Image (spheres, helix red, strand yellow):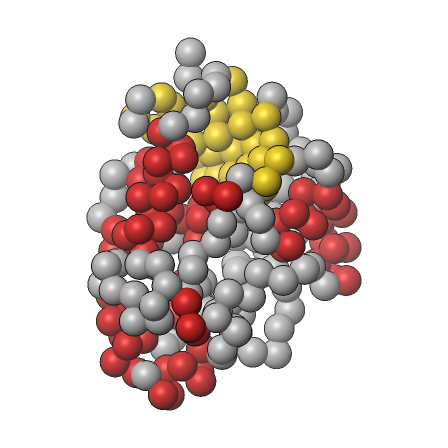
Length: 208
């Protein structure tokens, strides 16, 4: 029997400036959008990344007992954490350019994209359950899961856009996965922009 992994991305948080590692709690508007979303898919196991943003999304959608899974933690941007993208790009343009093109680069001293893909992939392939698994995770983690599941080049990580409050499904077993992506969870919010305003979103990085 196969396992269906349903990855739910949290609501986007309005921000005056995009900042690395901005995984703080949901603001009032994001909470309203989350609570207005459609019902969660049924699942035998419910997990969440450690970040406040993901845990609050789970709670707002009624999954208050979701278990924290450390392997689903967001991409570690090291010493860039808390800094604005424009600020880093102005001070370290070559480092930012390398980071956005080389999945093995980690000029910030944190986690290379390739390592994040390997981490999330190991979690995905190591699931010892059948049936349905529901997990709340950041867009970066969802992209890493897709890259691993479809055996895509690691460079494609930045070319995947994950919409807020959407469900990305990976169904399979033994390293062979099928993808169903971009299913809106929220009713009436299908046109909501992607994870804009976050330095690890394609919308931001492509303009840098």
